[in-house]
Image (cartoon, rainbow, N blue to C red):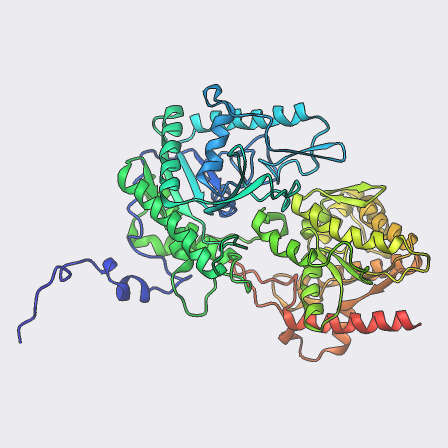
Length: 595
């Protein structure tokens, strides 16, 4: 039998799934000839806009030393523009309309007024504490639009990450980056309407965007990507799995339309790199929607090759070797500010109506409290709260003390919403006659992955000549100098009648090569905290000491998370650890309640 000839016989290996995909070890090898992007400018000046995944792009570009435009107005996020996350082309277009007198866009629209403060619903995650005057808000909004215009004039390469098709608008067809009431503002079903963009609408908006961009900068090059982060929730009548695929498919197809028809548009396949099938998938966290640091670096390793080809010093032949040198560790100080990521926490906190009876057990703190909350759920331990801010938010004082609400989180607007539900529960307790039945579990003031470093810096500044021995006095002095705000929140809760239990961080620094040298100072920090709180009559649960005394197989409680630079997550434990902690704390609370 003669071999038959088909049009596929002479095709390159990259056109066959087995050779181009199935044979690639995801996370270890890069895909050969994945993109045909050819940039027009060497060493381009780059701007990035879009969904939360766009911040990963910006952070990586900064780390690798590329010329990345960072907004001079908004510096708390890694962003080229001062309006936070933009999930749809329509929301991006509105920022051009703000300073275009011919468009008649009302610069004073989409403003929420509450408790003598004005909140910008076009930028719900920017200026979370609002403005004193509406005029100041409008001025800041116009300033952000003008900065965008100047930035685009000086941009060689704009990366636009398309995030969603589902959106919300008002009766004047003003579109919002998130549903009013989720991050900021208050939802009103008579005022706000759900809108799911069609393929034709997305293509039309992208074409208008092209006209706007090229009118500002005729030489600008645009790379479109599609965010691989799934929808958190859907307002369609479809299952979230189906709704997510529908949304991403429309965005991906619209991106192809633009790149196939306009020379200055290119497509980069971040969506495909994250969603291609893989054994033992490393690309999502256990919630199956948060992209891991390893995955970000894997995507950006491919993107780096595009930039390096433009600079003329890399070939496909050595692409895999080049990727092996790309490293980045994401820590709490490098958290991506992603509005979507807080929605699940908000949903959990708001499951209880404010009219329901008060809940006796309240949690608040950083990610440890979020994980502890999940562990309590599994043993049906009724409670309110969990994570409010990242550890870095508490350590770096991204909050404001408040006489009426204890404190106001300023890390982002979602943190304020998370705390407001917790505070409402605490307030219901405070309205009852003493003694209160409220117990609070917190790790406020711990955050040793941040605070131990701050403590060593404090030591160097306080004792420039050096110190022979670190004693309890040095820790207490540091607490007084650097942690007064954090500790005062706990003291005030205690003074108002709440039973407070402060919990130490886990003991896992000792089990990893890169962190075991920190064990002694971390444990000394725990001991100093225990001394302080005991003096004030507040319970301190030294989880690290209890764990070391009780557990004989600690390796089974370690986090399995490993960052792209091969550093381990020694900060957290795994689900088994938080199950152990939940059991210990539930027993402790029961004993203290019965005492």
